[in-house]
Length: 274
Image (cartoon, rainbow, N blue to C red; front, side, top):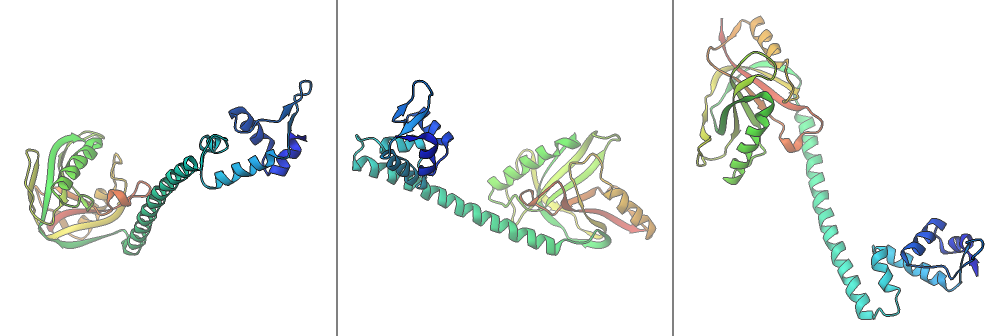
């Protein structure tokens, strides 16, 4: 008879593991001393320990291993169990391959974004008309994500890519943090799709001259300094906003490419010379 400590060392397992095997009925001691409570094992039980280790290497759980140790288990039973385990591992392998491909795609996009990321800067540029699907509503600032979600689902259902740049147009807003705003959210389209009761398909107007401010921001922050920065820059250079033209924000980083809370954004404000 071999004491539990020596048996654990010979079997390449811990005493805790042997106690667990005993508890679940996988491998019980050959003898337990009534007075001391010491557990004893026999030399032939080392084969059982090795068999358990072999089965664990195949990815089998202790619950699945138990029947394979039984004398009542036939070769056909063992073959069936191992085939099922093999099929499970094949599925996991395929899932892992897909996940690796997705990670490689994200890494490539991160490198592209990093290389193309502009410095924070203001400029005057021409803006071309743009075909979009848009949704407009008066909502609190923090609820605009609901508008975007509804719009993205509709665009995707019509066969268009929803994960492009997102456009936010501020038609009006009342004073005060978190106040309701007259917002329009838009997604560029490659072709015309049918409108719905809530969603319109149209072209955003272009501008001969628009002040642009490229920066990184949290689109859900209560207040963004970007508009103040751009307004100050416009005034210094002898421009003024064209009346009754809303501020346009473009978020160039798609939802799937956001890491952290910041995304590349551009503020556009049509301007004219003073």
